[in-house]
Image (cartoon, one colour):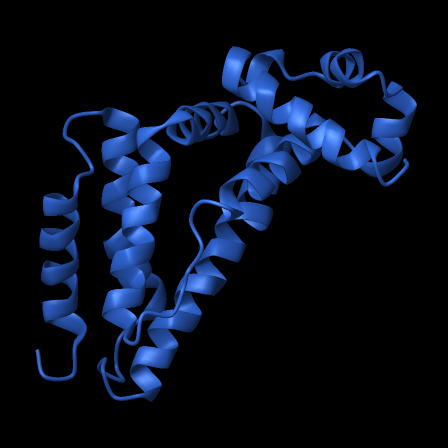
Length: 185
């Protein structure tokens, strides 16, 4: 694959996800959209799940990075705001589709866990651990539980649509969780 083919393949994959959903993203469809052969695509990715996840990760990483805001609380709160904005647009539609398809596509589920969730978890865990190290957060907290407490409600609202993921909700959520994990309560 030439250096110019990779961005073209990833962009076409995102466009297919946006316009038609995961089911329509086949190696054949990507090849047709890009003019790149299926053999070339398979040379670099073992299956469509891997292509989709690479494309989604690139698209997602531009929208929801963790950027140091001076404290664990503010860094996480700002990142959660970016997640909310991402979920409010086409990114949320893609995320819902990917999660739904993870239920019946074991290859996608595995790639989603290892290439998306694990990477996001490691980034979030680094923020929480830094908060413990600098004395902002209690030393006895369980990092995984903290991240689940913060982020699971966002995914719940994304998937069920029962309530918005707005700034007021994020403030209440962060206040509630951080009240239990800050050193001074």
